[in-house]
Amino acid sequence: MINPVGLPLHWRKPLFVTLLVTLFSLLVFAETWASIVAIWSRSETFTHGFLVAPTSLWLIWLRRQQYRNLQAQFSWFGLLGAVAGGFLWLVADLVHVLVVQQWAVVGILVSSLWAVLGTNVISSMLFPILFLFLMVPFGEAFIPPLMDYTATFVVTLLRLTGISVYREGLFFTLTSGNWSVVEGCSGLRYLISSFTLGAVYAYLNYTSNKKRAVFIAVSFLAPIIANGFRAYMIVMIGHLSSMKLATGVDHIVYGWVFFGIVMFALFYLGSFWHDAPLNLAVNTPEEPGAAEIAPQPGYGWFGLAAILVCLAIWPPISQGLSGLQNSNVVVPVGFSQPQLDNWQPADAPDWGWEPNFKGVVAESRTFFNDGQALVGLYFANFGDESQGGELVNSQNYLVPQKHKIWRMLRDSDYPVAWASGESVVVEEAVLNSSQRDLLAWRWYRIGDKTTDNAYLAKWWQLVKRLSGDSAPELLVVLYTETANQDFDTARDKLRQIALACCS
Image (cartoon, rainbow, N blue to C red):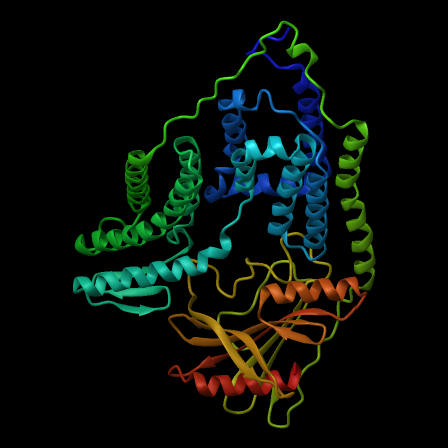
């Protein structure tokens, strides 16, 4: 007979299969899992990822008595989920979207556990299982809007306080000094930390799903608002101290102390609505030997084999399709250049800036002069796109944060009337240094299609590659100097070159 606190017989096989499937999933998609761990290691924003899986296991262990008498059953729905996750991983791998690959491998793991343990078991431990998705280092897409929100929030409060402030994009100037909102000021770290801690707190302290959802939503919104006040207070400390305080390491210290106070207040307020803990008592068998004859899981080695096959097929398929697409990739030696009567090739100017992206395998830089303006035209081809050197990559900055000379004052969409009569949207950026301003247009050219939308560009890449189309995939940048911020004239010059070379 099994002791109530020991491992029941009917759980031995499911736990063994669970361990086997987990290890197999990690092995098959080892490269993607390694990319997740690499981001945890190098980014302080996502260091919490190391604690997600142990926390999930701990949450399951806390309520182990709740799962003791549950019966594991093979789930075909879980298997279908693993197949869907594998297909998503395949698509993301073909177009090199790392974050989607990372979401997919966690989804594959979760679905595999669902297939092994069954719907009844997985639904009873749903939160700890879904908590595993927080392993994905996701959130960088929120950084630009969070930075813009923080700058707007701070400038608004400064003006309400009666302090004169001049703003240019993410840069603003007070009488006491200059400030800028950089990535570290976006509040993403606070947001992710608060959301993760808030989710665990809600699960442990509430039994009502409505209360849990409300608290998790508050833990998501509170750090966004609090980060605006944090940035405002840091600017005020610097302003009132004549820029002697809150401008160095103490800037970071103040931020984390403030975040700690916010989280303490959040948890303290949440404690007023906590629920009584669940009664996790287990009804032990009344008759001797009852536990010994507990039924075994309703699946055999066929179910396990089906899961392993559905996990193993995707990397070979990806390699086969990648070999096909790479054989059709053309890296052009020469690029189409505009031919206009009033534009002549010119020497490169000493503007102190030029487009520069990681992973480029072929590029072209040309300048044209019409006697009134000088326009630079840049093409970049990324070939078969090595990891981290993709055509569509969030790290392909025109100007990186904290650049010593250049800063980006504005970055927005701008519609351009193309020669075909259609309106094509390009990314328009205003670059500034102490010497000059530059107006730059950037867009993607996938075959004969043009867009500045990263998601649409990725979709076109996928369709083009699966069809065997060997047309080049290019990143195009047009740029010119603006005098006295005469952007209308600069736009007209850029449009002339764009229509000649790309429409």
